[in-house]
Length: 263
Image (cartoon, rainbow, N blue to C red; front, top):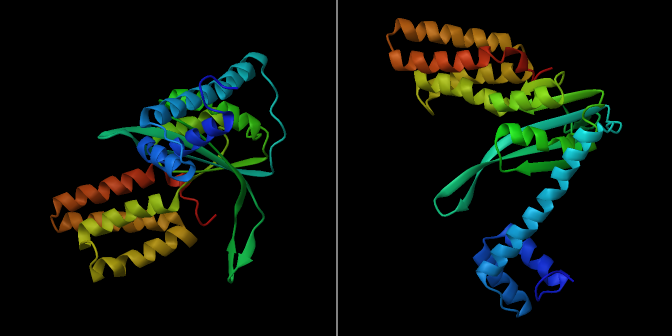
């Protein structure tokens, strides 16, 4: 038996509800479905306690791996890693950045509806509310378990944040790094919208070519298109638009090797 007055099953049900809904909603749902009343503070205490207890398990595993230098298990032929940060609400009007690692085994290409596609299977996730350095260290428990170190090739799909670059440097420095296509496309769109206006027919006509090229062709052509756009805008004396185009261009130029969607 666990400490307190609840059976293990009732304890678990409260914790699960507490992770899916607000604690007040979880207490209400528990009462609705079981007829057993429970207060919001109780749900909050049980959920937070279970989370804290779980957190000790992978943390202890990281310390053991670091201490014993345990060899990683065999990894897959091709593994995909994706690291992202997301803002989550802790309480009303309070937010914090949670970092998440997603890993999976890349499957063989196959055709669907006349187009070659690649799927990732065996997905697993690791999340922490922490700074980048701490997250990178604690994620070792997951990358070690998944054989990231021994995988033949690791494909890192990511946005352009520097802390994510550092994460990959730590866990698999030779990973093939690709800037997420929607993220790269957003920078191209911002440049075009600054010059031609958002939602205008002129912008739509201009945007079609770099969008297709970025996905299927040479990203160098997209950078050249942005360079021409910057030159044209500068001649027109549109200072604010020039600054936006230059910012997008500089961002993508610094990540030229990661614009690998077509490859």
